[in-house]
Length: 331
Figure 1 (cartoon, rainbow, N blue to C red):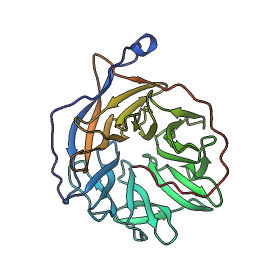
Figure 2: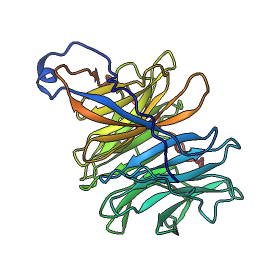
Figure 3: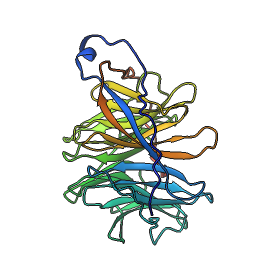
Figure 4: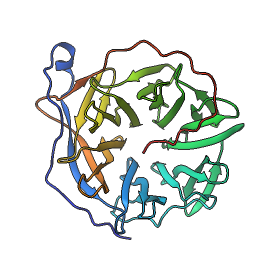
């Protein structure tokens, strides 16, 4: 299938704040819109998730019957047929990650048990995957080496993040979180994602190659933050919600700086994946129709940086008793 790209004038979205000290010495970056796109079909919601270094995009579309299917939009602008795991009995197969070999990963829903399971997809072949001794496995990202990450609910335990590096599984959780989800890892196995607090709020985190966790990662003014993807320079993308309920796309530059991007005229923008060329995929919601549309953007240098600082840390919440509750992953 051939996509119809809607090219629009370049738009740079950001919030302007005064910069002083170390901030002013960092490269001035902003986000520039390149194009928008939709998975073919009337009324489909298009929700891109990741972009490979070669420009292939994996994602999810939701049809008018609220059925979710995965897709790949190749770098030449053509679409794959719908990606539907053969074991999907819940009308929910989601494309989550893709690497330069066009190996895709994702998750599907087993309606009978109400649990998610991971899969890999290449050359029209599916390989299902579950972390050993788990009730739910969600595969959310993979790198060019073939290492991957996601979220797992151990039998009788709290939903945790996991990395599979060289075949070795490492499970981890942000302290006192009710759920931890790892969404992407880069070539050096730095990873990022989000976690859920006892009060239901979400916050970003990133994890160094040596296992050190950095949390919470929120821009000032956020009531809810999600980090979805990082590249080999460990630039991260995601979104946050402000006090008014508007959702903004973000580029996070460790240790403490955010660039904010809003699609013109939309109150919901999400940035979901970034590659080593600093090309970004995500989506915006048309406030009139409620339809989600895919966006392709890129990071550019500008004469003036536009940033939000990292929010001040707060006191940790109390420990949460172990419970088996699976969190549907954000997209």
